Length: 294
Image 1: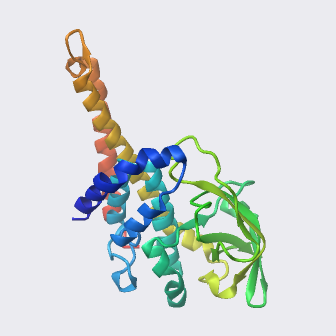
Image 2 (image 1 turned 120 degrees about the vertical axis):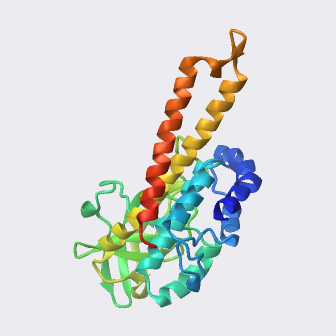
Image 3 (image 1 turned 90 degrees about the vertical axis):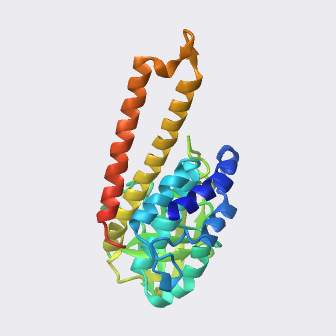
């Protein structure tokens, strides 16, 4: 039923807008809100907290189907629904969930995750962004680069060190000392925007610390499983679409008086592509099935 729902969304609303938003390099926020209306922004969140109460297989399925038509939007969706929402939920307390979940589950607010840095990339242990306690606030200094959704995000899940130990915070775009760069140019998947987050003596309430000081790596590793699987699902969706295009072209294109799919070499290309795609499908869905609910 979920696959049928997403396929209908893709046919009716995702496919028609994909080329336009990719050409313009813009995130379709209205489409993100539409996903919220359908309960797709909280697929892995328990229904008692406003989510859909499903598992990682459901998340894989959604990313798989979305990416067949618009992998750029699927990547933006991943950054919101997995890197922010899923990560936030399983690291937060009830008070934090009450403050932030409602708007990110509807898509009114877009989320992102700030881990990668200009100087060290994804080397978490080399992270330079740091936080110090100042009364009821933490003061954050540093920057994040190549962050999906950064130019459009309203809330960020940010990793920073406290006395050398990685910790996680919820940071709002409107907090003092927080700025977002214009879009970073990309070569593809342009309907997913990317940019930098900059923290210059940014003031973050103590109540926005996720879990305990120094607990950030645990949160990060716990979410990595969902992140990698859904990224793989996007690749699978792209492969499925490529295979459909390949077969369609091979049936239409004529050479020497017959369609080229009748030639052995073309059949080989199609067969090898099909076999690799099916192997990927089996691997991704099998791993997802064996994962826990969070």
